[in-house]
Amino acid sequence: MIEIRELLIMPTTRRHFLQAGSATTMLAAAAPAQTPKGANDKINVACIGFGIMGQGDCLTVSTVPGAKLVAVSDIYEGRLTKAKEVYGKDTFTTRDYREVLARPDVDAVIVATPDHWHQIIACDAMKAGKDVYCQKPMVQKVEEGAAVIKAEKETKRILQVGSQRASSILYAKARDVIKQGSIGDVRMIEAYWDRNSALGAWQYSIPPDATPQTVDWDRFLGHAPKRPFEPIRLFRWRNYQDYGTGVAGDLYVHLFTGIHYVMDSNGPDRIMSTGGTYYWNDGRDVPDLMLGMFDYPDTKAHKAFHLSIRLNFEAGGGDGSGFRFIGTEGVLDLAVGGALVLKRKPKDSEPGHTAGTFSKATGAEIIREYQKKYPAQRASADGMRANTEQRWVLPPGYTEQYAHHENFINAIRTRKPVIEDATFGLRAAGPALLSNVSHFTRKTMHWDPEAMVVKA
Ligand SMILES: NC(=O)c1ccc[n+]([C@@H]2O[C@H](COP(=O)([O-])OP(=O)(O)OC[C@H]3O[C@@H](n4cnc5c(N)ncnc54)[C@H](O)[C@@H]3O)[C@@H](O)[C@H]2O)c1
Image (cartoon, rainbow, N blue to C red; front, side):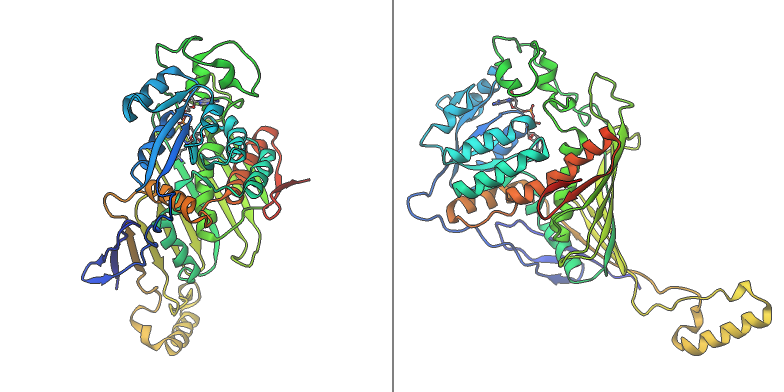
């Protein structure tokens, strides 16, 4: 018998009932937003790096009660104009992010620059007394991570890394399912991300008004190697190792965030990665296809397991992303922002037999013994019982993006920990960034996920 239950998981800000076909179950909703304390009711937010994600983050955070966007920094004039168009002409804008950090009216900053600026701006911001929402990957190089953790501790600032799925109620459900042992011991996880479009492969528009006058080129380059003005490197910075982190830093890191959260894991200790650039030969120096294998050691939270990741920008079959957690008792499929399916093999299923491969007499003997042992199953003595399935789906309108920003704004008010602090951020970024090292050096990398250091 197949039992299919459909549960609607509802937004964290409201309490909802979950519908399960004829059954109705209530899923524990996340705690409602904390009541703001005292004078700090309003949280003034600034954005540093007002591109695709910075704009998305600003739109989202502006919908969290009490949060307001007041200032924007970007090194390209067109994005500052855009900020005033969206948030009004009184919005403070500047090419120099330090002017934003110097403003006493700014409580928190979103750092949504290219990756090579994350560590520097996040640390500067915390030292200037600001709480920080830092986009993923938290750092461009593994060695930069310790400085962010140190600044977070020393300044006692809140730092939330922007891999929003850590706040998703769908991932929280998956975590519960696995913690309850519903699919047994997870020994293997498969994760993949396929893309089949130019935009998916980062071929973003290059605005015709980008000139040395409208772009602060040196400030974009920062500590990256000096080179003459070349707008493609700014607007498609992900394609270059000098500024980005390739498909691993950009997208593996989301998968690691999801896996580490669901499995309650600190990360793998062995990392092997390979890949190549085959389809998007547009001058990029990072792969457009990558495969990774990762060994997770035994910990108090989980038994040892193995992870394989596929990331493919040449996927002719279409777009898609998801996980399969393979346990000894079942399988849990988790799709990004979508449905979660749990299949369980009944624990008492009979083991089957190979009677037909022996002589008639021996086979008949095996069947007789089998039927004595499993009397209830005589009619289908060679079969497994039916699987069971459970399905959870996100409700229309739910976004983990909102939940993640709400978690950040609540933490600013309550000074309680965020869901994805700097340590979590480095543990998600570390294996992703070391995948690049493994790919480019053709070596297996060893990582200490507790201490967050590369081992010899
Ligand atoms: N969480 C997510 O789902 C998600 C999605 C997309 C991007 N991101 C992350 O967000 C970050 C930005 O990505 P994007 O797609 O928005 O890139 P983008 O190129 O669209 O935006 C980056 C912006 O930063 C500006 N910039 C560059 N150097 C700067 C500096 N020194 N000071 C101020 N501004 C500077 C650029 O002019 C640009 O407008 C990346 O780290 C990326 O990994 C996260």
